[in-house]
Structures are given as C-alpha cells and as structure tokens.
Image 1 (cartoon, rainbow, N blue to C red):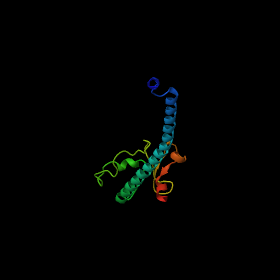
Image 2 (image 1 turned 90 degrees about the vertical axis):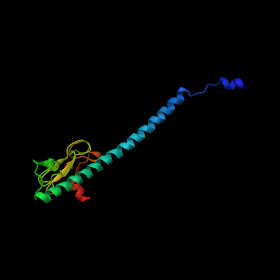
Image 3 (image 1 turned 60 degrees about the vertical axis):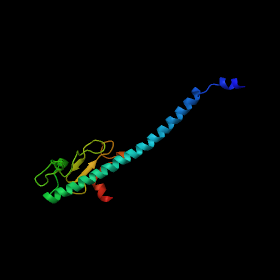
Image 4 (image 1 turned 120 degrees about the horizontal axis):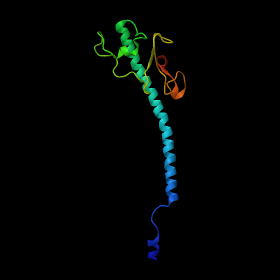
Length: 141
C-alpha cells in the first residue's frame, strides 16, 4: 500500500501548466488595456496643468510689458531671463506630455493668444486621447 503512494508522480502536467499560462496572459491583457486608458487620461490632465502654468506666465509677461509675446517670440521668451525677469517665468522645456512643443498663436481664435497641445496623435482636431487641449478650453472649465 505504501509503495503505491511513492510511485505516483509529483508535479503538474503540460496541460495544467498551459492553462495557467493562458489565464495569466488573459489577466495581463485586461490589466494592460485598463491601465492604458488611465495613462492617456493622466497625460491629458498633465497637459492641461502645463497649459494653465503657461497661461499664468503669459499673464505675468503681459502685466510687465503691457503686451503678449508675438508669434515670432513665441513661448521661448518665457524661458529666457530678461531685464525685468532675471529668473525666467518658466523653467524647463515647453513640450507636452507626448514630447511635442506647445503651439502658441497670437492672436488666438477667441482671445489675445492661444496655447495648444494637439494630443496623442499630434494632429489638429480629434476626439478622446487624440483631442486637442487649448488654453481657451481651460477658461471655459
């Protein structure tokens, strides 16, 4: 009777291992799909916050110079020291979370200026994660 127990194999069959691997793969796929949407939303929120910071710097520039930067000056004037601002108004690069530069238009479509991020696809227009994020939208919210 004891011999019979010793002769049994201990371990898993190939079929059992394959089933576990397939289940783990399915779970990993579901997690990846769900996390991707959160990551895209986080990048959009980050772009909104960065545009709001740029808008504050533009208003500070206007308060000191009684004008907004021209299209030729662009947003680069905000990251350089000037006589009125020995420390730049903005630090760091002026790129959106998708590593593309923010677009600056003066005059803007609604106001005296407009700051735009073209979203994940980098194209004008779009919906969802590809939607444009503009300074005009932030004023509406």
